[in-house]
Amino acid sequence: MIEQFTQLKNKKVLVTGGAGFIGSNLCERLLKTGVLVTCLDNLSTGHKHNIEPFMSNDNFTFIQGDIRDLETCHKACKDQDFVLHQAALGSVPRSINDPIKTNEVNIGGFLNMLVAARDAEVKRFVYAASSSTYGDSENLPKVENIIGKPLSPYAITKYVNELYADNFFATYGLNTIGLRYFNVFGRRQDPNGAYAAVIPLFVKQFMEHESPIINGDGTYSRDFTYIDNVIQMNLRAITTENKEALNQVYNTAVGDRTTLVQLTELLKKHLTKFDEAIAHVEIKHGPNRKGDIPHSLASIDKAKDLLGYIPSHKIEDGIEEAVEWYWNNLK
Image (cartoon, rainbow, N blue to C red; front, side, top):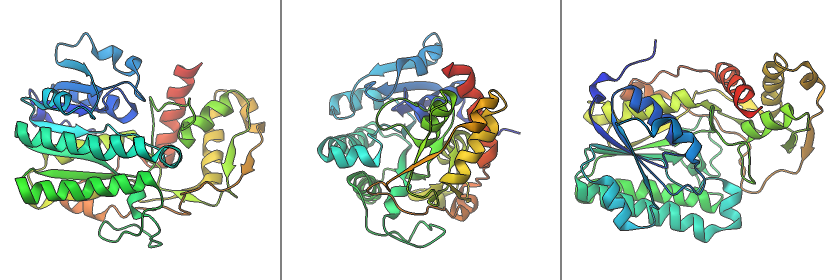
């Protein structure tokens, strides 16, 4: 049973990065809940086709603009009740290749959004944080109050976001919640481009009978998190009435880990339902990737205790749904 979050009906919510993978899924769910949704996106990594179905909805407003422009941020935040800030330049490798642009968007743009949200007196600012913040900490599972040294420019920017959010509450009284996303996957995640995430990339390659290349020996593991779990966390973050839950960061994950070898086996299993030849596609191995941590596993106890979060999808549930979506939409 999917929780309805009916208390959000007729509220005004700004989703930055709303034409992206996570953002467009948030827009869709909010519109189904009766929310008045504003989407801000510069379409640099998001896609117009992700939000095309919403354009005719009277409750949906699209602003094409960049969070690096403070005036645009002020315009987008005006009269909003809540902000779900998803806009960012993701990808560890991208940040290693271009740390300056990653910094401009993820720190400069984030600060602009905080200032605009403060000035518009929004009730709550919920933002996409990242599991990369745990850096070189070897503790498993990852617990929110124990982090290590960041291993990439991207990780640094996401940690700085948390520091700024904490400071804006202490200094200006802006209520914030940070959601540390762990390897999110699902419908609308782009399989194309140099920085495509592993699941959509591997799905596309399998569908084309190409060999996926695993970085390293395949024993690295991740807490792969289906998009519906992320949507739930965002909605809980803007609706919670628990004052203790505000101005915190939360792991947004399943609390389970899957190796890359196990992941490819799961993808094969569910893709062969559509094309039996995929069972015979060979897996190849390449070098480990710079900035990658060996293992990632989240404790979700804090999210359960303070936000009432219970994941709706384990890894295989999500893989099954995602594979079906890709099969119907990539062909």
